[in-house]
Image 1: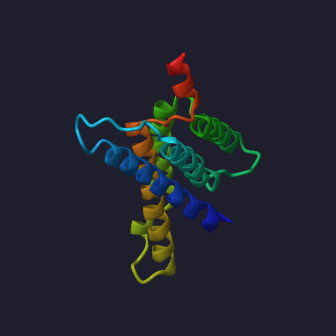
Image 2 (image 1 turned 90 degrees about the vertical axis):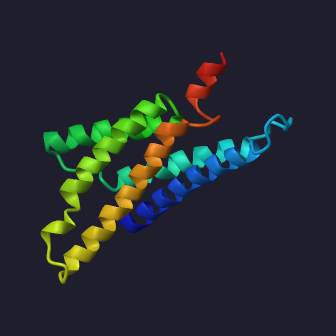
Length: 156
């Protein structure tokens, strides 16, 4: 399940990237009127946001220590904010910092010899988490898209 969740979060990063490429391709000719039908772009951004938070579900630890409980509550709150699109840029930036810190702590492949099997596993997990943090940076740079609470608040 952990492997599936991490790969789904990578698919979310690709969806966010594809949505931005679709948005850039529609403004290719300056001054030429275009139809403003970007429903597919909005739904790609929504699915990318939702798939991107699967990475954080793999980092939750269900133990009864106070530290793990606090980390899980903060993580779930940030995941919920990103999924519904409320204060998305701020929440995704906090998630990037949190993911990079956890990634350096949990996936420290540089502490193992290159002939060790743990070196391969941790290196794979490290770069996979780094890719998801890049997707979160895309979310920070371009925003949540049209299907979000931030967009609805801006329209009113």
